[in-house]
Image 1 (spheres, one colour):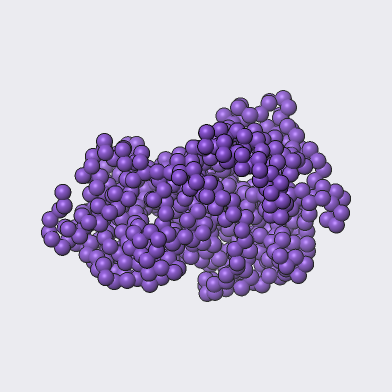
Image 2: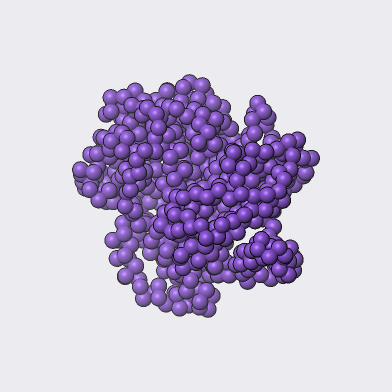
Length: 640
């Protein structure tokens, strides 16, 4: 049964990653005057088309997700893959890795690079100029959406500026960040000429964020950019690249399921039901597959620029030959130790020269392939933002003091797991807890923030608009509920707290709040279980108890709910900081960010480990805490 679920999960990942979603335009997101500049979309990894040959008409298309070709090759090898799935029952992953790996090499041989990082074959970008990549012209010549990036967000942007003012940058993504940034500089010159404008706005995603950051570092002095918004950017690399390159893939099941839930905006909170399902055999397949992938990807400059700085030397020593790959190493060393190291000062220079540069970083989740780092599931928060982070699922101890003073501004997240004082741009980086990689469009708050940063000049830093605080929890529909205290900044508790406001973030499901539990602060909440919240509706929940007259102290609020779905019960825990007086005495080290529930107190450490191993801890804890709440509330006593 475990293997069946895991196989279905794997197929879900594949199809959700290649399926194109229908574009849905929501209006009214942007407030204020729209800038007059065209928008350049700098996409995520491998989103561009490469050809082998002289021109677009006669050249061989060697990269781009060609679903028809994949299906054709899958059918050609279905018998062998079936044999491989059968062998997996005996824990032998090498057979199916061999079948898939050899097929991968055959299909994508021409995109390999030499040990020195140069392209083995003379490939060209299919599209290089503004005219070729203008969205309006592409829609006329390629109605299937080919060569258009981030189609959902592009549709939203087009509502305000029109498709004629959107351009889709194409790079040879195999090359290092500096090479791609040079391509971007050349491309922007063609956009300025084609549009007749002296500047552009940039919307960059993931790898595009690394490319754009490098472009601003090297070419920002030209002043060709008005607004640049880097969402979930791989500025300092991607943890998943290190895990893959050193063959250290160990899927984190919870992060993987949550990633799928967020990406599909699933309102069936399944992750707590499947914690017992282990994907070890899938880890074995992918680790066995890595040598085949390395044969094609192993010498791509971009893969090496993806190595997080704290992992770079280790990966380099394990994988690269210092003689054969001397030129590749030279270029990636330059990126890591010269370009990346100067990001803060180069960003500051751009801002001083009138640019608005913004980063939106996801936090609060492990890398899906197993690295225990605070991340958006793919890119560590430290790499995307430059911030100092507690290990994933941990927090700084109470009383934590941020590393840099930042003029007295508080740069520690309400969940006390992020210190933004060390960020590339401490005043121009927004952090969204539980924002997964690539989910900008899936989150109402993030989408609205991004649109205002991109299309207006109204937001120059994290203090420009109270609606967009530096730290915020995700409102993705899959999370179902979102809580904050009325009268307080999001994520904080102070003397002004009146009620706990809980919002139903789902798009389709009605929700009943069944219980609220507090850890780290002695508050009791009075829930109305018969009040049903429609999608988007909020309820104010009164509470009793005193708010301590202290600051820099962590608290966690857990909201339990029921809904008419396959999984009728669920919960969400959010981290808060008590900010109501003198700071508590500073403690050293890290603490668990997990909320302590009545069930934890009941079972103790020994039984806790057993239930976690079985994957049943969360389900038992959730059900017991709801019963505990109502026995205490209605009958005035605590169940044993």
